[in-house]
Image (cartoon, rainbow, N blue to C red; front, side, top):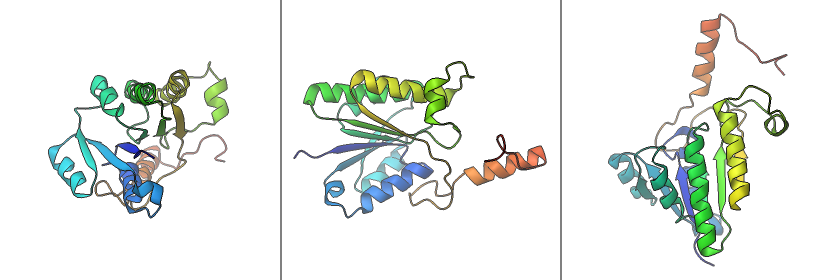
Amino acid sequence: MDDVHILIVGATGYIGGSVLSKLLSSQENAVRKCEVSALVREEERAEAMAKLGVTPIIFRDLDDVGHLRRVVSEHDVVIDMAPGYHAVASKALIAGLGDRKKRTGKEVFYIQTDGHPTLATARSLAHTPNREVYAQRTTVIGVVEAGLASGVKTYVIMSPTSYGLGSGIYNQLSIQIPILIRAALKAGRAEVIGEGK
């Protein structure tokens, strides 16, 4: 079996760093055989990734879609933990996987964490086109449609909450609880959605 090439997007973030740490420490034989790469913006972080045994790939930003598509076309799996509202980047990543699949005939996979700001159900995403459109919802729908159109197996993980200490080498503290505290202080009370259920 050929080696599986995994690309991590957001490896220096809170969730991405923890996922990368878990991959690197896995004792599963199939995972240990994978070649792991990570997109990074700075040379210093590229050096840190290389020391971990991760192939660093320097990129300008998520708007550099041509570069993203080319990079991804050399990978079998993309785990995207960058901000979940960057539709153009998400579609470029999926397009690159589609290019890989066409060239190799191998199955490819795109996994995106949508983040806890999206409070929705699969039903509301798929069946309520008249609701207010917002960036994360638009991105999720675009990701699903792009995956279907290109034959890329696509998964969106909607994390209900993420907090505590991360295990990555950067951004080890979650920003979720501080954001909720600041919002409660600003409003003068803790706020809930609907009945708070």
